[in-house]
Length: 131
Image (cartoon, rainbow, N blue to C red; front, top):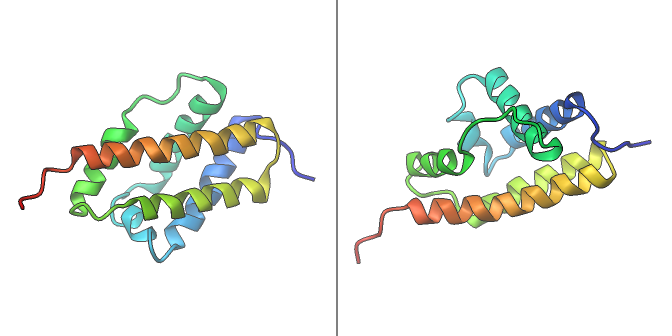
């Protein structure tokens, strides 16, 4: 029987299992595998982020929108809405595999909102193309 996300340990499980999926994905895995050098530190930071986001803790300090715009620049504007769709499908599949409940649904909705905001931020940070 699945339970709802209720603790930092649950968030850590979600984050670790999600990135297990993402890192293996043939279409988006390279964005992560070529960018992130210290996976344990990154997973801990993302656990802080999601714990802060879901339980209103003040553990995460950073600007994920700007960070993702910088990653897009590193990949010469290659990250598109399609890639965020893959990311979101992995997120929801990971949630559905391990959890159910109110906080789980909140995690899905927050990720949907975040993917849209990140895509728009990436797009806005791209330099205008010469015509």
